[in-house]
Each structure stands twice: as C-alpha cells, then as structure tokens.
Length: 109
Image: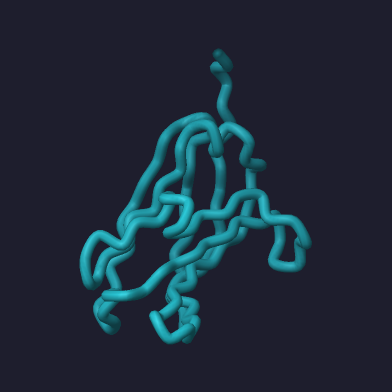
C-alpha cells in the first residue's frame, strides 16, 4: 500500500525532496510520477520520470524528486500525485501518493 505524503510547494521556486524506501532495493528500477488537478483528470499537469531526469535513483533506497521553477510557476493551487517504481522485469508498484498545495507567487520577473 502506498504511503500518503502531502506536499507544499511555492509557485515559481525550485524544490526537491528525497523519498527513502526502507522495504525495497531500487537497483535496476525506474520511476514515474504524474501531477493532475484531480485523480480523474485526463491531462497531467506535470510528469517526472527517471528518463527525463526529474526523478533520480540515488542509491538502493533513495529517489530524488526535482521541481524546477519553470514548472512550479505554471502549477495551479491544488494538485494530486502518485509515485510509482518499476522493476527491471516490469512490475509496477505505487509507493507514494498525496496532495500538493501551491503557494501562489506574487513576484513575476
């Protein structure tokens, strides 16, 4: 069962956090994360993957999640997400899920 972890991001700012998984060895895994306005939304607001470099498997237990300011400046005030890992043989497991609240940016450059 996926753990729930809600995030708070600042619109227009860079952000990153680490996900440490104690019950799985991430060697040979990839990962993917999508952000949507609601779970039923057809279009993802953002997509992070190991392929696009926004999710990095740092070691056998840790995933680094990165949100550059170019992406956060386009985020609405409320989103949902989940994070899935995929083993080398194709087994997919959802490990994290939650809501993202975005503090609206006032300064625009």
